[in-house]
Image (cartoon, rainbow, N blue to C red):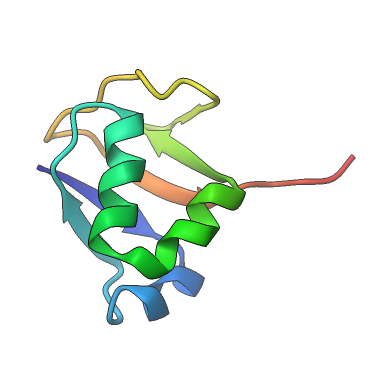
Length: 81
């Protein structure tokens, strides 16, 4: 299990929780686990989110490993140009 920190806007979809635990070994499993555990998050995840692991932003690498001791943040994906 890994602990995921959520931004304020997502807490309405997780019953007010600012952190949730998900069983995952990589970013892809993490995102799928979040969508499965909290179906209302699915459209947000599908639209695009960023994941920070131990202070590093992970871009487009769903196989990036994560560990129970990892510090994980789900972030709004910045868009624009």
